[in-house]
Length: 232
Image 1 (tube, rainbow, N blue to C red):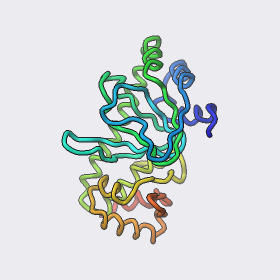
Image 2 (tube, one colour):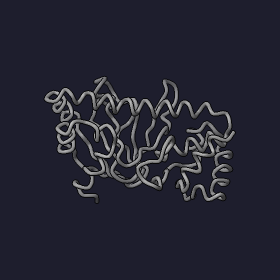
Image 3 (cartoon, rainbow, N blue to C red):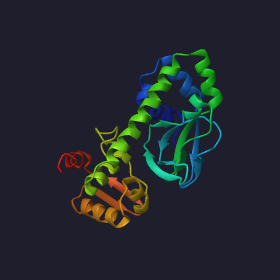
């Protein structure tokens, strides 16, 4: 299990906390608790009551969304160092997305009472919360933009890069963490048929751009994959 000290080092890598005032950053890190979740274990579900903010430390966490009629569906994969869950802090309403562990995963939880207490004493922290929300909106807009790509292969590559945390630029790690999703889940995310997803992944695997395993994709050449998006 990751030590609390190592978990804190990972947690401050994300832009919103790294660029926050030191007093706010320290207060957040000191109030976090380390938790572990088994594969497929639900962290929280769409519609759950207000709760705290989470940072993925190790493993992977799947983000699910639901429309008024259908779902929930997996929409995104969190990578280590990423924070999520600030919605109820702003709306005081129920969760609008859900989280579940893709594999054995560790997270830091900042409970809702703790972050509210910190913000009461340090109102400047709301700027950091706004930055976190802006980052999530940017990710959502990127996903929407990628779904408008007409070419199936390019749309699939764009989806893989987003899930690997390196859609527009290199991520924090040279080799992105594995993407823990089935072909069916990837098909839904990229708005493709499952057979089309399987064919594209096979092609990318043959080109040594990705590596395939059971319910897992590893991006071996994210720079080359991004370059492919510039070619129609």
